[in-house]
Amino acid sequence: MIKSFFLKSLLGLLALIFIVAIGVFIFIKTAPQFGAAPSGQHLAEIKKSPNYLKDKFVNIQETILEYSFSNSVKVMKAYNKAKNTAPKSAINTKFDQQKPAVSDSSIRVTWYGHSAILLEFTGKRIFLDPMLGDYAAPVPFFGQRFQNEPAIEIESVGKLDAVIFSHDHYDHLDYPTVKAIHEQVGHFFVPLGLGAHLKSWGVPANKITELDWWQSATLGDLTFTAAPARHFSGRSINDSNKTLWASWVINSPEHNLYFSGDGGYGSHFKEIGKRLGPFEFAMMECGQYNELWNQIHMMPEETVQASLDLNAKSMMPIHWGAFTLAPHAWTDPAERVKAAADQNGLQLVTPEIGQSFMFPEVTPMTTWWREVD
Image (cartoon, rainbow, N blue to C red; front, side):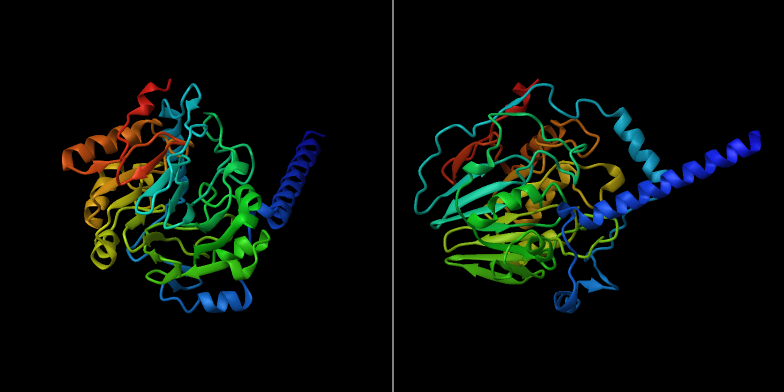
């Protein structure tokens, strides 16, 4: 009888696991937020890229992502030891403050937290990685945005001439944001393959330009160039590295800007600086790092070194201040990058979230994070 009870219990458990697995599979295949992988003629064109090898995109520098059980245990231990990973109180943002008027020769910059940045210049409004949603995850259980007061209002973004995405991870490419703004976006500029996600969400193909590394496209007086980054991509369990990741150079007759997207430190920064620099303003990843994944995210000191490699005159640290996606104190990126920038004589730009400023006339160097509980 006992043996029969255990056998029935085991069969019941296996049946439950099977049902759950089927449910997860159906959810991943049907939920729109997962997007879509390139296929058909689109995939055939992508495969012509020199950066696409053995059915996936690869980095210039060898980059190993460790998914072993032992490494997973180390990651869990790191999170268990982590302290002060999120602010205890709301961050006082500047979204409700009056914006300075846009001039002919300056750039109005507005940081929305993390890597979301609105640039307004040459009569154009360009939004970089506009992740404005509440969760950096496919389901609302993980990656919740820090509380902001006032909060981001997607409806207030207004008409955009262009949106640029660096890669397809949830903290950069956000389904709710794309659905909310795509009809008021003139054009999307993205790395190879990422257009498949956008098209599955209702963005017309003629509004999407996909670029490989070192390829460029123009919009009026602006030139957008996709440049290398050391990272990876994927939104589901079977689409790893099926779309490309990139950093971006944004050039006008008067300005030359760099946007890092995500990625670890590598030799590509010097190559970008040599081929497309120098840069007067670089927006550089600085956050969500750990020694366990140091090949795909930079430490703050590496962020400063990468800026020097690029030959950047000034640098704004991004990829922090909005989500807890790594086991470090939420203020650690700002403190460490400030110390490294001061030591190396690099001009640091640290606006408050929601603050609009005119570059190069104004370069905010605040320590606003020290005032948040």
